[in-house]
Image (tube, rainbow, N blue to C red):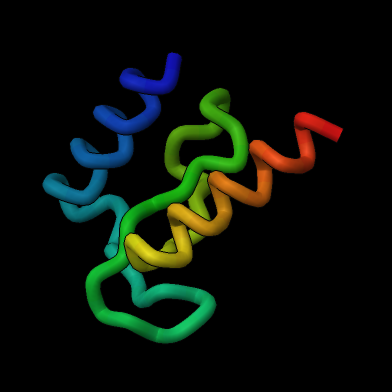
Length: 65
């Protein structure tokens, strides 16, 4: 499901259906789409690599609690 969501997002970007945005935390130009749910592949938070890693770490810690 994860790979499908990533592929769907990349395809939508290439076709011009989705526009890459800046990081919602720091405004960095290079941002990746962070999927809150893989069921909604085009519904993403745009985060730079640093903040994307931090978000995954935060979610991992939350799940461990």
